[in-house]
Amino acid sequence: MFEKILFPTDFSEYAKRTLGCVAGIPGVREVILFHVIEEARSPRGGGEIGDIFYRAGENFLMEEKCYLENLSQDLRVTRAVKTSSDPAGAIIETAEERGVSLIVIGACGKGRVEGILLGSVSTAVLRRSRTNVLIMRHKIIEEMGGKTYEKFCPMILSRILCPVDFSRYSDRAIALASATGGVGEVILLHVVSHGDTKAEIEEVVQKVKGQIETIRSSLAAQGIEVRTIVKTGNPAVEITRIADEEDASVIWMSSHGKGWFRELLLGSTTYTVAMNSKRPVIIIRTPE
Image: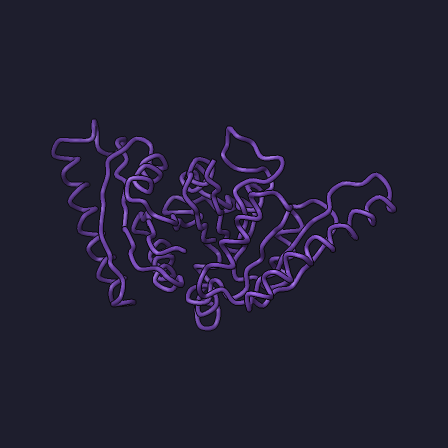
């Protein structure tokens, strides 16, 4: 599924720890290390100053290339440097040019501010990219070590929480999860968010349990370990809560569902989960 990955880096310690996780993603064969030199730091993108930043970027990327190759000798690692006034745009453009299947990006970089859950570049990539995106959370990376590292890096797909809303978007996300190597347990979650009375809500809950059981049976027939959970409440709140409660290694969800905003290329529930979850989040894009 994720054979070719684009990894944008700012050479921070946090980025390096995130890079260590890339080598452990099941099925990855090629990693493109990518650095954006902001034009604000290199006036008009050229001249002596621009050349200095460019050469420095190349040198740092070579160091990270060696680091990644030492982690996994089977990986093909390449490098790319670009000058742009729009770092997120450069990341997205490069992902599309290189035909990558996943962009892995940290939640924050060198200039992160405590209390901001997602940096500006990560947020822009999340909103605008048509390529699948994996957001790695900074608290997980910084506290990583021992068993925690083993779970969230090489075992990042060991227990995936997959929100379901029965749209074709979530159907595709589930299908891709079931076809991805290295997936351990799948937890299917649906959150009932409508119903004027208790009787109406219970009626919807019972209907949903039947629908989600059909999906569970289909996955189980493929040899996948799968459980189902049905809750009531705010979908984004319940998804993040259940992910923590179930100790999910990653939240795997569609970029949009029934009520998505076309102008953002991202549904409101997905956006809220990605912005606030303490867990890694994989956003699966659906071609239109």
